[in-house]
Length: 232
Image (tube, rainbow, N blue to C red; front, side, top):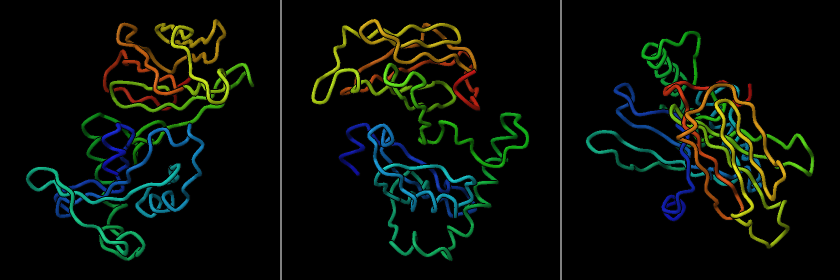
């Protein structure tokens, strides 16, 4: 886990956050942020664990995950968690987790003015990416998207465009950003074109290559806005 974290490839998903009602102890899932794009298997045990903590419907996780416990007393630090703490559904933290998560979301609702939301929106949030298959068959590329309150990140798998064992040519990549549209081309061919749910800050959009994945990072025009979906 330490090696993966240092590599910058780990996302966290809160099974329960630290609060005054749980001795300031939180339990988190640590997962590969692009596990789906790597075609890692669906981790049903992780989804079941999230469901037991009050997430309905349960999010999908891909590949191996780690479960860790932290304490926010003083500086945030790791504390021990045993196997039975995860497998035994009668453990206090797991029994209380659904109520704790609802209370957290109610606090968020009060701060943001949202109504009717009882758990975090899973559409591209909390490190759980949403995969979108190519709409143009072999001409296009599938992609994974995630978001936070400031940005939307789209990871496009370009390996199908270069062949097995070959590297993507950075000079053949072109990404165009418009107020409500993103277009990605490889070798002058459109591989992803998305009409967006809401507006971007075009000046705050950029892209990088990570192996054969194109990572597109876009700032939202309205900071703090959580999109219920990516496409309009």
